[in-house]
Length: 323
Ligand code: UDP
Image (cartoon, rainbow, N blue to C red; front, side, top):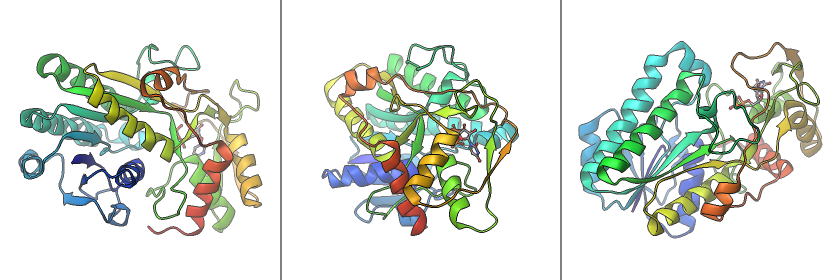
């Protein structure tokens, strides 16, 4: 059985679905603080537990036969982490530490960790490879890097083997429309563009059009959530066949600007976005694009979804959201 923390969240629920479709037995551990119970796969076992509660967590881990862990559960709002770092260091770092300690105590050796490209901060070189210096510029990203560091030390001392996956911009939704992206509040670009098309009074603020990019807006690497899910399954396979930890970027290698997202969304939906130019948002680097060679080499992973398809699946979800 594979333990998935945060299996009621956006990327977690899509990964659980793919694992179950491939015949795996899954235990979801989630405290439902930000996830949705509707997102928990009906065929998954579920324990409503908080990673901050070490005792309950240890009991849960002892109750099931767990061979590997995929750890998504975390808070992930950059702005909130700046305003309330205490919340982030506690929930993300202490929670993950409890989990890592509990699984190590139990002798579980395979661990896949949900990390982020924001561990690089303002990268010197783009596309960004894994050899780029990590210099996170907000508490959220710092918590993720701290957890990577804990994993590294647990590997050295106790032989915990892991894959840390540094995602670029997760986007899109399940093709069948059963699960999708819901955040409260929503801060991500693609859902906000789509909301501006259908919800009266909702206007997208474009954060800066004076960047040193071809159209002046920020460039990001948008990667479909199913491509991310597929990489997690490959990471589990990697851990079955290798005993060396590895850190891997997950992105398409293609950059799209905020204006590209608006234009492609308008093309896909045949609707007009409602947006206005605003000043830059503090802490946004101009360009973040992945060098994904390592994912291809180590995991044999190639992202399949192009931007239009990413937006198409997000639109389908947006028109018929289940939660
Ligand atoms: N963005 C924007 N308006 C918004 C939200 C996002 O212009 O209301 C821009 C943001 O500056 C960034 C890109 O869209 O360049 C993606 O932002 P998002 O918050 O989705 O992901 P991030 O790159 O911050 O992880």
